[in-house]
Amino acid sequence: MKKRERNVFIELMKNSKMSDRDIAKKLEISQPTVTRIRKKLERNIIKSYTAVPVLSEIGINLISFNFGKCNDPRENMEVCLKKMIKKEPKITFTAFGEGMGKNCLIVAFHKGYRDYVNFLTSIREECRGVKHELDSFLVPTLKDHVLDFSKPITSLTLKEKKKTSNIKK
Image (cartoon, rainbow, N blue to C red):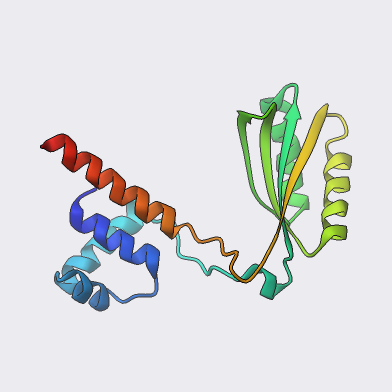
């Protein structure tokens, strides 16, 4: 990613509602250049823009990170997770991976502990034929718990820039 593209990308990560004119002023480049870069980023890098809610304010008081184990994860767990995603709107993310003796991850939002327990019961009923273990890590939501990925992405992007500039020297 070129320097100007990276800078526009970082500004959009910080505030996607910022106008091209305001980004241009801040970066000291022309507004048409920002518009062209934004369009390119939206084609190749930016999937969508979204609101970042304060979860506790909308009645979500727990986030569960559920780590599962299945003997045949690709076949059985994938079928199970697809069923669960359709059935459970609480699920926000699923993935296969390795670590801590587990091979899948389910992230879900809950109104409270009872809602979480019902969620686990639902998972166990839906995936009855699959031999799996499930361990959870529960996180209470607070006003300062915001799912904002702009900070790590902007800092990683800047670190990547420094690495590339050091290599060129």
